[in-house]
Length: 220
Image 1 (cartoon, rainbow, N blue to C red):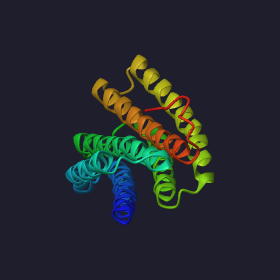
Image 2 (cartoon, rainbow, N blue to C red):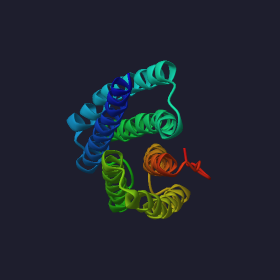
Image 3 (cartoon, rainbow, N blue to C red):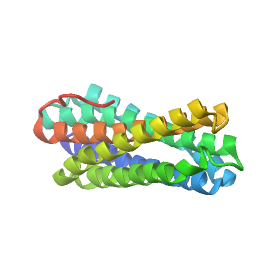
């Protein structure tokens, strides 16, 4: 029975690692679709989000089954609890990448935001991709140093989010860009910032898994 239990836990971890790779691919492709006004790539991200949802549901079902049938305790229980929260964050990250892709498709063939903010948006995408790469490695290796790396990198995205928001507000006040473009760009800016928040939430959950100390202020 214990061997079956360990196999189930291993399957859950493998599922999370695979799911994080799908989310990483989604944000990488969504950012590329936005950068190059690539409508085909945007549509791929949108359609692939269904697979992320399905895999999240499969992992959820397995964790509930383990919880009910195996009655895990101590670290195993923390693992199951953390898995459910992490799976929810990954699923939401997939949604956010899909939202970025939807905006890229909606604005095609134009860029999502004002042209002078292109570099800022692409930088936000690059930062989110870097965070997602670290999340993937963290779930695969449980390397403790990655936790602080992920949490610390959130500050740059938060600062960039504020800078872009201030610039968009100025564009709107001065009538330098169509109002719909300002709205879409504001949404894209928010999607990147929330994606980063979920990365931080996962990092804090992994710290809880390792230490048993509940996160003080989870971001999601």
